[in-house]
Image (cartoon, rainbow, N blue to C red):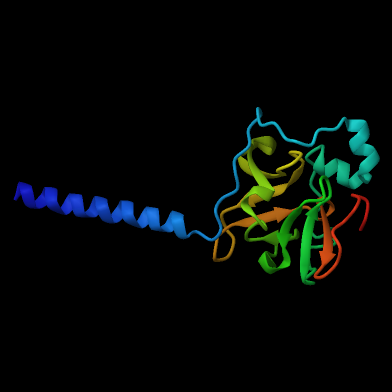
Amino acid sequence: MRNYFSFIMAIMFVLYCGCGTAQTKNNKFPNPPVANTKTIFPVKMTDERWKASLTPKQFYILRQEGTERAGSGKYDHFYEKGTYYSAATLQPLFSSEAKFNSGTGWPSFYAPITPDAVMLLKDNSGGYERIAVVDSKSGSHLGHVFDDGPKPTGKRYCMNSDALIFVPEGGKPPINSKQQ
């Protein structure tokens, strides 16, 4: 009986490990990297330079970790095909193909355009723990990610419209942050 139990446990272990490995290798939407307070971002500027290159709303959200009021952002109920770029670094962040109506009042996506476009950062502001989403090149605040999104990822990347620049499908990438 003891050998039988050991045999069953060994099979369960192999199946468990095999399933976990298969899911990781076949995951079309891997998680973005995690940042921390020691993460060094390639784009660094003084507040004065950020203020010169961003609108006041963009600066408030991207550099001061602000949040626009629910339902006030221009991309909340906006469904044109195209790409959403970071207003901080002009890198592509999200595709319209991953956008969905979350009913929260902010533009929401189930995955970034590539896992390395954004980074995740623990955020304990407001008295509770959340996961902030930041631009991977500058560490600029974009919004937060939650585990209540649709398939295929189950994630809801809840972004601030003023942190994004939308370019319609076939359009040219933005050349400055104030382009809207």
